[in-house]
Amino acid sequence: MSNSFSESGFDLAQVDRLLTTTRAVRKRLDFEREVADELIFECIDLAEQAPTGGNDASRRWLVIRDQSLKDQLGELYAEVGTLFINARGRLEGTGHPKEQVVNSSAYLVENFAKAPALVMCAIWGLHDNSGRPGLFDSAIPSAWSFNLALRSRGLGTAYATMLNNKSDEVADLLGIPPGVTTLVCFPVAYTLGGDFSPVSRRPASNITYFDQWGFTRERPSADGSARVQDGPGVVVEIDTDARPKAVWEHISDINMPAQFSNEFVGADWVTSGAIGPGSVFKGRNSIANVRDWETDCIVTEWIERQVFEWRITDPVKPGAIWRFEVAEQGAGSRLRFSMVIGKENNGTAPRALQDPSLENDVLFERRLIHKANMQRVVEGVKSLVDGPVNGDRQ
Ligand SMILES: Cc1cc2nc3c(=O)[nH]c(=O)nc-3n(C[C@H](O)[C@H](O)[C@H](O)COP(=O)(O)O)c2cc1C
Image 1 (tube, rainbow, N blue to C red):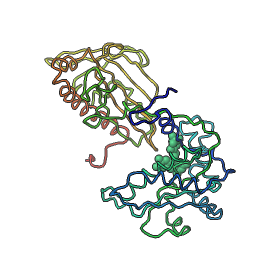
Image 2 (image 1 turned 180 degrees about the vertical axis):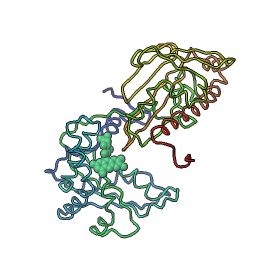
Image 3 (image 1 turned 135 degrees about the vertical axis):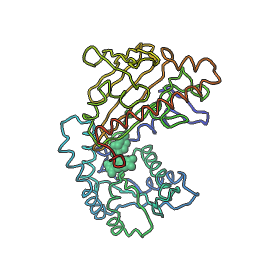
Image 4 (image 1 turned 45 degrees about the horizontal axis):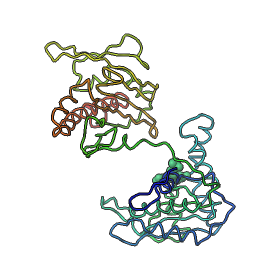
């Protein structure tokens, strides 16, 4: 790792390692090694530097050391955690994406009381759903700082919240007064080894929107405004009750978007063979006296029940890249429909590039239209797989 210092003098390699490798630790908690109170105080002092609404000093920390109390908390944790024990049985050996986290969470359920210390982060205040930044919200930043402080000192934990389902029992057991909310109960221990790795998350460019919900850019812009060269895009997402299989059946049908999108009223989508990786389908206008167009769509990614991506006109210099992604979300699915405007082979880029002072506005307006049509498409898919929403019933 290179030694690079930020303007404010931080060793970025060290800071970034802390931020990217502070993981949920369960199976690598060392239950045999004692943790001194001194260290816990130190980490809480660091955590207390976190922001707090109104600069109100209302956070409280409760450290459980007594084994009998830990055992009772462990039993309460296990009552909620049976869901992990059951799920572990179902997922074992299946290679399911959640297999590992479920297995590790189940391990913690069975061993919660063995942690040398259980540390609860609490706050004077109740979540009142008022929409104002509540006292409750002030506890979360410091709870995470506490995690980071532990990691920096060779300790680890998991952000365990399941006891929140047993808050009355926990309050009785620990003498917590009414008016206090407990948010998280950290099982704190030294970690077995210190080599934790960053995990794969969606890149910022996928989930960061500029100026309008869903407006993406593939690359950072030099001056902050939207530019054709930075790959401006649009994302819409919708959750369905249906499983990915049912959603996939519709999104993998090339005529499906046309049913719902205003952009494609009267368009035909045709393919000479089965749709799959590398295949080409054509879109063309079939209404007489309306602007004629015909376009090639090259399938550039196709993973059954997960991804369908196609590029307009030229796979290397696409007019646009369109992409459906479907993934499990809870008991149902999340459908993501995204597009990126290409640098050529489309009508928008030349219009945007005609006058640099208008580039941002042209891209903004065009994406508003795309977004509205794409929203219609995902809502259309949802109505096909879930049935009409209540308000739509006749
Ligand atoms: C709000 C929240 C609640 C969580 N609740 C629990 C929990 O009750 N039990 C547990 O073992 N892990 C819990 N976790 C930890 C997550 O399972 C963990 O962050 C996730 O599996 C990703 O692992 P990573 O943090 O190592 O990337 C929680 C995390 C958060 C942010």
